[in-house]
Length: 312
Image (cartoon, rainbow, N blue to C red; front, top):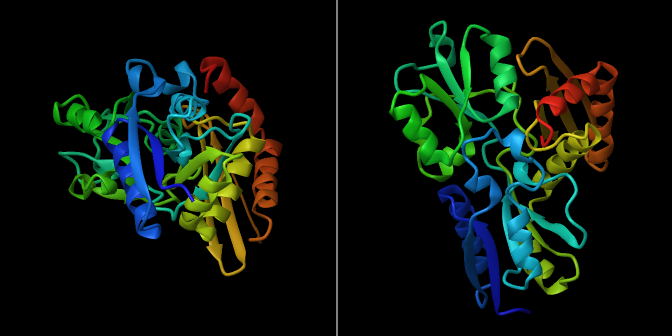
């Protein structure tokens, strides 16, 4: 077995936390293994003045990491699974899906205790078309503006008074020990999460069996099942990382329940579908829910989104 393992990671504080977390877990599982971090910037980190969906959603945060793996500089990459394209480049695979952290979205504001308390016309910041659509459906009176940058940058813009409130992933705030900034969490019933939100995955070269043997110890089977169902739904809808699609899978014994959503960008139309199936066939369930959404007209909504955001 290898004595050292190198992780390619983005430089943002949250990505570094994720890589450090995986490093600690791997070294705990393999006492004789040394894990080294290789921090770098990706295209998604560098272009901060354009909405994500305008600059290329697929592989926006992963391609440069994969390039370093191909060059032999790194063995694995740690990703937030919601950033991982539905289809990985040839030769790459996901070797481990870690236990899911909080999948919800968090309401953050210095002046208002809850989303419902926001006054008419208040400015809400989010980089997510999914969040924007669902929250505008509930509060069409709000002004929703695009918000880019890492967690610290976004909080700084809120603190500078550019926004009355912002919405961030609960898991990201918790990982950075910023729980005190969370005024409340949106339940999945109010704002359905992004595909695999709160879940970390480890990417590796399929041909490298030694690496797979090392990282598989971190695979969490329940989370893997939920991930497979959610990604299968998104894949059938041909959804990228930056589209108004929400999905959430829950396990109950030998059963898995999946709810999916596709929304008009302004929240004027929200399509939902849900189904329950056996945990042995999560992809089948994901495809079933996607087909129900397509039957309701999800493809027309998504086609319109892609016309406006060709790289979504």
